[in-house]
Length: 177
Image 1 (spheres, rainbow, N blue to C red):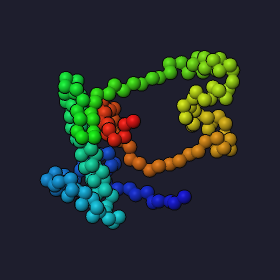
Image 2: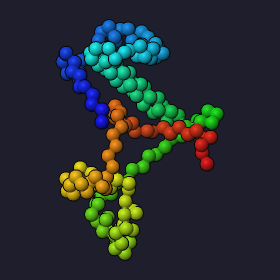
Image 3: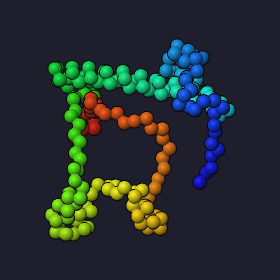
Image 4: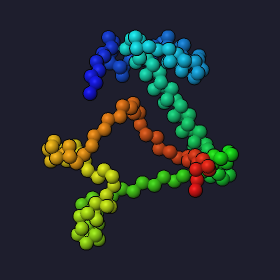
């Protein structure tokens, strides 16, 4: 496992650092292509504050783009509800109605499925989703050795800022059966 040095900025906590006035001014008057070129020119030698400024700038841009997209999707949904689907060559936009199903009583459901499976535990397991266990609680319960045999842990570096709730569905007709 590679050890990386932790860097600390010589300024307030990153969450309280506003995007530098110079960076906002210079980026506010540039195209997306120019911003990408500026980012590509950044080197590892940049100060922590410059990196934080860029993270704050991109967070601001992403937030604004998400707001614009959400507003546009609402307009598109209203248009489609009045006029019908939008077809642009191979791409079709339709209004989707996402569905969410949640088990209200896990214990009672487990008993019901186990009874319906004739008490066969292997059959019950076939009705579980891929990760039905709270891995942290199970780890504490069964210990490190057994946990290592039953669970696989993978780490994937990624900055996560939330999961959008899609309202508009984009369908590429080339991939529809």
